[in-house]
Image (cartoon, rainbow over all chains, first blue to last red; front, top):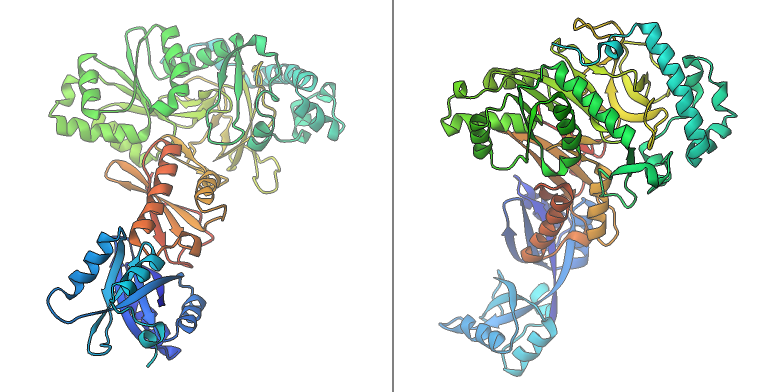
Length: 143
Length: 430
């Protein structure tokens, strides 16, 4: 149920994100979802890719600092209140969302959100029990 | 300007050397007898104190380093018993084993005497109000200056360096004539005066004694022009006294080092060979009168040159050129010695024992010196959550700031972006 996310430390300077995407393109890995969190000095680029190990090795070889974190991909109904339902459930279970972003692809005609929870296993448990569809890793990363 | 002790300060060269030889023999005898470190290091080269027949014999003696002083923490380098020690100084407590200095009553009297020479040498008299504006962490410096000024009979006003506008007011109302401070503070004062609306004419200031960190001729011109004073340099060495080791007279042509109390040498910091007068190298000092904490051939790490020509002021003691460089990566800012190894220790501790790649960047913005600690991010210091990433930045920032006593800025950069040959980048135009 967990999906592996890569995070890359980048300085706030010109062309750094493009540097990351070109390294990933060169090893023929597809970026499924991407989000950037930034501060005045630096940013953290987070990605879900088709082959995390390959992308990580390529980035590390080029001197980037790469972290790996487990995140959860959840189907969100494309209608009013779709995301609200998920967030309410998480909140009422005493869990927290550290950050979230959306995926570029549609799965089963639904939008997909990537969640980083403070307690990943418990969040998966709560979501599954409530019938909210957590998407399997392969369906997120594979073609 | 009056010479405080003309008999000593204007001795002939041969008299100086005779006195130095006698005092050196006494010092070597004392340290050989009472300090294990010296006994061992002299024995290692088969040297007995009575072997010293001339000042040139002295060249073969081993050097003493800061590390030696730390290794013998706390009292190993003392040449007297604690009963005779009336003052203890530990200037940098940041090390696991800091250097601890002791002073006998006599040592303190010598310090006061040397400070009186310096102060009267730049014109301090009974009629002066001497304002000593020192950062609180430089409190040890204040003692000697204060007592020297009191010996002359001047009125002493010790203050910290906080609250610049108030200082200007004090300076005006107390009719301060002499200001003893750091270059950074003097520059700050210029701005404070101009924004306070106080007319320079209402101030009585005439002389600034500026030290504790390096400052250029350019800074001197700015301070003199804007504060309408004469500004002279003073050289401090915490391992000896603090201020009072060497100081400029109004000739502003080198700093007088009291040769009846100190024997200065210049060596090549790499080959350790002695260098001739005029050549730039590392200053090495031997104390000639210190009782509790004598130093034999102490390597200061400061780069300067020696000039034995008698000065236009009538003093004959050697002068060292103004110091702006050191042999190591240690640098002084905000009147604090910034030692890269100590910063390394702090970051390593917060990084689970892994040594970081980092660089210290010093800059002068307006009148303030700022330090940025640039750290290359590693797996152990990288988080996917911004919150956690900022927390480690904060933790390191806080730890270093607390250690130095003033705020630093910490910045993470990508791996490989720091020039590993440059641990320190001092961009201040001092």
